[in-house]
Image 1 (cartoon, rainbow, N blue to C red):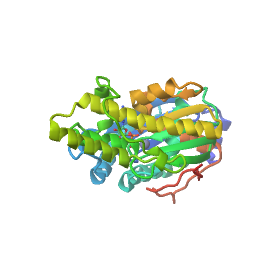
Image 2: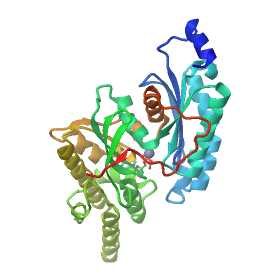
Image 3: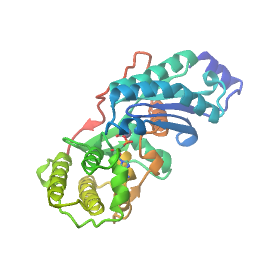
Image 4: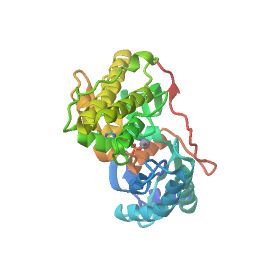
Length: 355
Ligand code: KG4
Ligand code: ZN
């Protein structure tokens, strides 16, 4: 134990139960900083989204992303600490948790280097967090009643994975996408429809005024092994249909969005049903940007026989609260990182056992 911490504990300068984690997330295009007390009490959190900047390009431009992280990270940290009432981080913080990967190299680099600099300057322990474990912990923060084991589907612009979370730190990857992520399919189809980036929330909104049975999409999952996914076939089928409809006239956008969204949700729910059947685990959590999709949320929440756990929409997309929570859990099970930690854009996650 560091000397000043021992002194603090001995002289009661800091209550034993006040464990503050500074969380930092910068793996893609959101910079976010949070201060968490214990496993789930949020003292402060903020986020600087780069969506508008990237929208002009129809997707994330890595070079811009890292520059914008660099501009945002110190002001956001100052703000988060101030809002949490932390005036002397060296004395008051117990841990720094930072996303180490997977993600964009330049983006991760900003978060990891900043976190390491703080850890050195303040002499506070640091732990590197896997972004996927972070998404899983978005549910742990939001649901005190969520107990291991549970299934978690992480579904975002970069991920579509089903994980069996057996215990804190014990994860089994049951299935993953073989090509595009579900969010990527939403974004690409939206782009072809002429809708703004990111397309997922726009499709979600337009789908509310459309018919989910107006268009038919081929079933792709029977051709995909195990609990894996594929969205590139569905995406291509959708784009071909759009081009075909355009040759005949206009595309009924609301109906198209509703039907496409229903096809994506059908794929996600089918795999979750199979995962429940194969593992016998009925606690089902979702996470990631696509977990904000209303049709998907409704389908999970109303599924008979499941105990469904949905993170609030603000914690579906990338945020530092989930990173702080995952970092706290990792620290509690004895994990530590040090100054040699580097970002890892392709960081592995869980025991890879597709069933
Ligand atoms: O988790 P996230 O913020 O970043 C990544 O790690 O990718 O997820 C962003 C993705 C985008 O593809 C976006 O279109 C999708 O999540 N998304 C949605 C919705 N909100 C965000 N997709 C469908 N429906 C939504 N409501
Ligand atoms: Zn994410």
